[in-house]
Length: 100
Picture 1 (cartoon, rainbow, N blue to C red):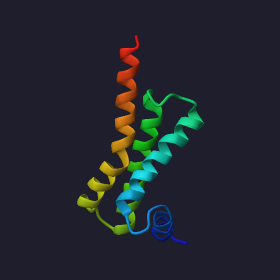
Picture 2: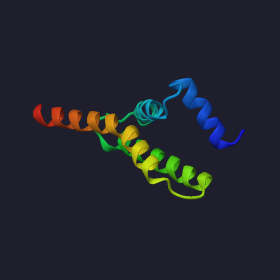
Picture 3: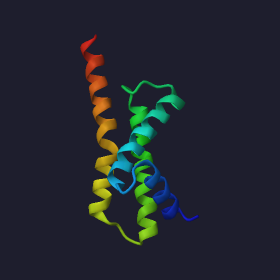
């Protein structure tokens, strides 16, 4: 199965008919997996960096498969993927600073 078909199959299982929601869930899943694998707090930049790297890799693969950048899709996918991981990171960092 080629990458695009596999990606669409997984996205349809996670959020049928909603590519945007699949990106939200994917970003959170990568964040939590990175947290478990690295054993680093979500208040550290490592789990967030894993989400950023995976999103960048995903968009580069999309660019390769489509033959060109699709900027509206790329920007929307990136915002949907990174929004909640960034909110969690900032909130947890802020809480950590307040507790000192």
